[in-house]
Structure formats: structure tokens, C-alpha cells
Length: 83
Image (cartoon, rainbow, N blue to C red; front, side):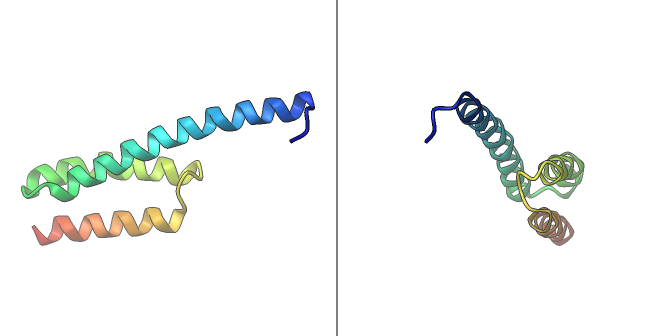
């Protein structure tokens, strides 16, 4: 790796962004797990908009792919409908 000041700054920025993205992706994954483990339809229906909002924000910032976001939302809605 080059020892340019700009290269060093990019390394620092990448580490910061990776930590930030990892936190929000993990938080969203935990929310999805919580929704999938819910057996009460009303509780799942109230939790669904919050989880969808988190997933959409991740897709908007390219932390996850937009198609993955769509697939997650679809599978969660199918789960709620099957309750």
C-alpha cells in the first residue's frame, strides 16, 4: 500500500464506514430474526413496518443490494400472511 496521505485517509474512512455498515446490517438482521420468530400475527404486523424501513435504508445506502431487500420484505410478508 502506498504511503500517500490520501491513501492513509482512505484506509481510515474505509474502516469507519465498515464499522458503521456492519452495525446497521447486524441490527437489521436481528430485527428480521425477531420478526420471523414471532408467532403472533398482530405483533408481527406492528413490527413489520419498522423492519421494512430498516431494510429500505440499508438498500438505499448500498449496504445490501436492492433485490436482496425486496426478497427479504417479500419473505417477511409471506411469513406474516401465513400466521
